[in-house]
Image 1 (cartoon, one colour):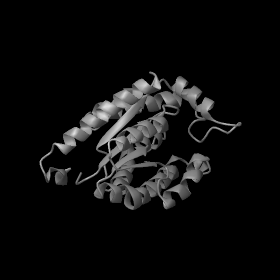
Image 2: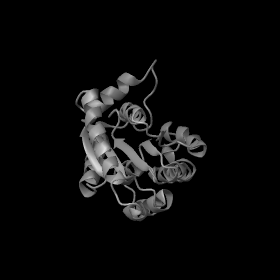
Image 3: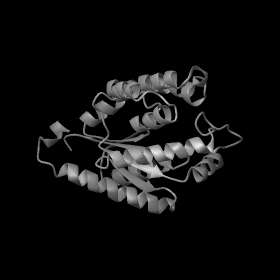
Image 4: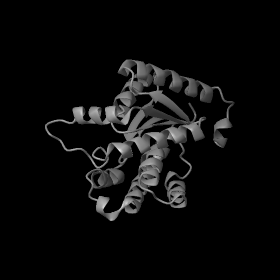
Length: 224
């Protein structure tokens, strides 16, 4: 593979992104593919330094605009230090959250100006738009139940898990709206079905996308 392939996983709290990324990574590696798994916020040393500030809620009192800027700073470091080099080296990158989470969490439910969010995205993504985005769709009430069940030894809910159900519902609709607006990039997968069934749907979608990319004429990826 001359050029790598960038896959992001999106969705609400408790949708099973980490689990499905792990399963997909195992599947792709078993086929002999070179896979890098990453996450946001985080994924690079600079971005990981910002992760705790964001998820602990330490930045919350300063408002969604500052949070969006912190996410953007973390993403820029992640893209340039980790994602872009991996893609240029021909690797498959699987990332737990990316630009769509900012669109939804800070843009939609943070009520931030759309032009402000677009400007941040343009600068921080810097052309590194995902080739494929898997949106795990789940009833928010079930997602919060799952998120609560996975926490261990009285661990507190993070900055976003603790928010009200109505906000979680708004985020679900926002993710679905993104998928509707960008059907060539986004695939919506029912995360309410059994884990193995969800994994199989994702596997088929990813292999189809990889097959289409690998079938492109030599040099066609330069325009992507």
